[in-house]
Length: 340
Image 1 (cartoon, rainbow, N blue to C red):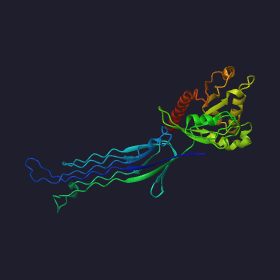
Image 2: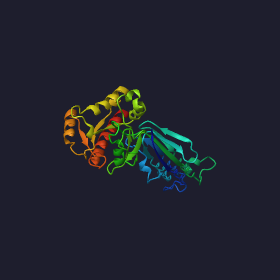
Image 3: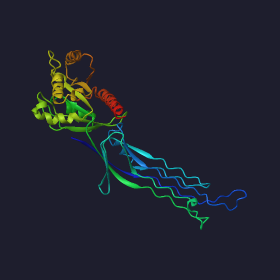
Image 4: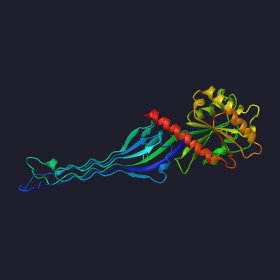
């Protein structure tokens, strides 16, 4: 299931500079020939994909982008300065279409891919260019060519950055409601969620990211039990995992039972799934008499850091969001090294 983020923006490349009409005027040369320079080229507008961007949220308020015009030509055959190009950064997976016609302009799939979507106008030629044997003093020059204006529709078909996994009724839907704008169905019984839910998490300190509430996995999911294969496919494309465990269901004699069931299913379905960065979270710490279970679980996983939260009351949720951002950023940095 894909999260679709859309934006419509107007882009305008720079106009070319005007060619100059000028004549050489120096001491003892009162009637010098033409020396008007050419105008500079207008700046291009370039789209570039980067792993630093995850959504099209940046276009929520800014929707018009224009590059610099080329400078006009000057006397003494001085060419005007070219207008500076403007680069708009987009997340990989952005489909660019013409908003008026619906025609696909470019499908930007790979990281660090660039595309000139609006070319700057060519600078006009100065009157020096028009000097001939029959017209030694041309008194005209070319105007610069206008830049291009295009209305673009950007459509991001983005798979979630973060997948929330766990056994049925672990509180995944409650958690995604607590940290994002998603509003999945919630109920105190297994398999409340039968389709993945996606939500955008917005913070004051980083760019938004997308989380997916993956329906509860059960033992045998890798063979299709409980629609397991269908659900596991969604996890394949997420960048990191949040492994949510209901602290009230922990068996004190076998505290890692739920944790191991999920990880075993991941590994049996695809060994790469078990290697994804994973944040372990114990949920429902608002319930009474759970401290012992938390301590036993922490001791069992040894040096792995455990996040303690109550998705229902919000306790520990902000700390969890910061940890997700930390791990997610680290994952993007590692991906950038691979891309380079």
